[in-house]
Amino acid sequence: MLERDNCYCLQDELYQSATHLLRTTSDNTGLAYLNGDLKRLFDRFVAWALFIGSTPFTVVALIAVLTADRHNPFIKLNFNNPVTEEDIAIWKIRSMLPNAQKREASVVMGSPLSDVKRTRSPDPRITNVGRILRRLSIDETPQLAQAGLGRLALFGYHYFTDTDWELGLLPNKDIDPFSGFISAVKRGLQPGFLGLYGIYERSILTLNDRVGLEWLYSDRANFFGNLRILGHTVIAVLSQRGAR
Image (cartoon, rainbow, N blue to C red; front, side):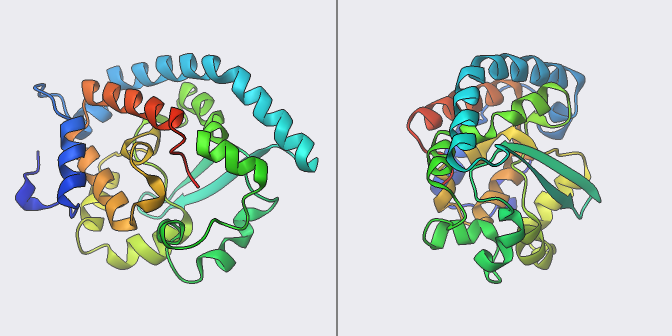
């Protein structure tokens, strides 16, 4: 386990909060735990339970999106992980205008999308219905089915967009926290539905904070820590601290 002197490059308050959340006396932590069979089975079981429980909200959301603009309420986002050369497919309930992913360049204007969300006004691509879905995180419920099928981890790092990789992570790949996170991805850290990113105020996290949190998670993840992440995520959703 990395010590504080190795620095996840997090603000002290954020570091203390995250490490407290992931506290454990178990030796089965980090990537050894994340890549274990027990964790994979637990992910699938909990994912299906959450998916079934959220079905009524998902159905209402799908009807609302379809009624609003008569376009397909589902959207498949395709991202490439340049570290592993793997393509990542993320299914969501559409909260933006059609073809929003193709319009991303005009929104980011040369900055990583994570930093754009923090420093600028709400994304103009988000619809009125979508704004509500994102605040409640209902737009992400299709990913529970992906986790149940084993195509996405239930607990892991929140995916980064292509612009995040191109404009933020890769240009800084030789310095921490970026190098530490990239090393963890090379060693098996998988994108997931739940994680530290969903607990803290997403819209105020810098890209540096996000990467630092994911690096810390890759080193300290454990069973009871994941249970706390699940509980805190429910609290975050109920308090409407989803994406903006």
